[in-house]
Image (cartoon, protein in one colour):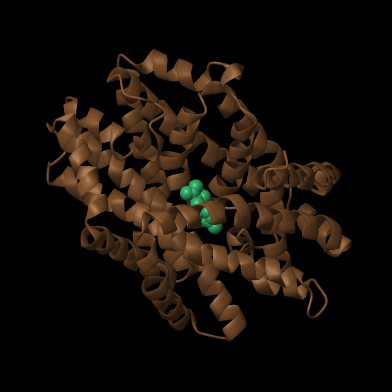
Amino acid sequence: MGFVLAAAGSAVGLGNIWKFPYITGENGGGAFVLVYLLCILLVGVPVMIAEILLGRATKASPVSAYRSQSRPGSPWVGIGVLGVLAAYLLLSYYSAVAGWAMHYTYLSVTNEIAGSSPEQVQGLFAALTASVPTGLGWQFAFLLLTFGVVAAGVTHGIERWARIMMPSLLVLMLVLLGKAMTMDGWGEGIEFLFGMRTDNLTAGGVLEALGHAFFTLSLGMGSMITYGSYLSSKDDLASASLLTAGTDTLVALLASMVVFPIAFTFALEPGAGPGLIFVTIPTALAQMAGGSILSIVFFVMLVFAALTSAIAIFEVVTAYLVDDFGLSRNKACVTGGLAVVLIGVPPSVSAVWFDRVDYFVSNWALPLGGLGIAVFVAWKMNAALRRGEFESGSRLAKFYRTWLWILKYPVPACIVVVFLHAVGLV
Ligand code: PFF
């Protein structure tokens, strides 16, 4: 249970509450959601099983995991290194958005959102993005929390906080859902989310759904390899993966079932892009009865989601420094933390850098890491070890061949198509 909560904590993050609703909005709703669900089930879950399996089999961080299963000097180790680099880069801008969520929590608590006019709410976001010290201050505060939990260790830090934050997040989400269900825009919001309008779906939308499946399930950068390395051989790995992916999907859908009815009730644009959460939703909350409490609930939930994910991202960097450089956990956290704060964070204040790094991580590093793990586990890893790991403690042992076949053929094929699209060939 602790593992599933920690893995679900990694998966459920800004990707579910901030990114999923806005890309669903931009891609026209229902048909996109269906494609996304297929990507999660057919590509995401098999890759997640592969990552956790490699971690548990080698009991090592990503770089050492690849190293221990390949010849000396093998280029596979490079896939592990790419994952650590991606984690480092991702944390430097993920923490910026998480810092915004903390700032909005503060604005909600000090009652600066409730009762504001739409122009005033837009002004709050503009002021935040224009003020470098405010943005950096909240970003550092968020990073300190992240480093603190990771330094406390796997059982006393990561698992313990996941056990507290994940159930709280679900409760907060259900409170908001209860409110959304009473709103005038509920029917329209649900129809937007689940109604099939296939003419809105483009090839780009399909590829975005696949890319997001990697991001939201925390795949391709070794986060699940690292978490898998702490899993015991008695645990049921395939069921844990399904449960993690199921929780992640549920939260993304619940978040959308809150966001779209609010947007429709107040006649706001569902395809408003990244500002949907920080402008559209506060605009609506400001006009609602009970808006001040609801906005606290909403932004605390967002901070919890971001924190459990940032912990998982930073754990990739920490485990690498512990395994490959022999540092103690505390020293690894201080070294990794200083590197993120001093070298990673400063450039992330520039919007251009932010967009470029997000583009590199989401569209290149994660799919490449996902392709690497799928090909490595399916084609390179010792077959007896792989089968033993899949079957050990598993109620789903009979699906071993099906899983392996999916990992060998459809998964790499789908990811290659994403790359061909990224370079403009399809
Ligand atoms: N899955 C997280 C989200 O949806 O926000 C992001 C993430 C966390 C990506 C951890 C990768 C990772 F290793």
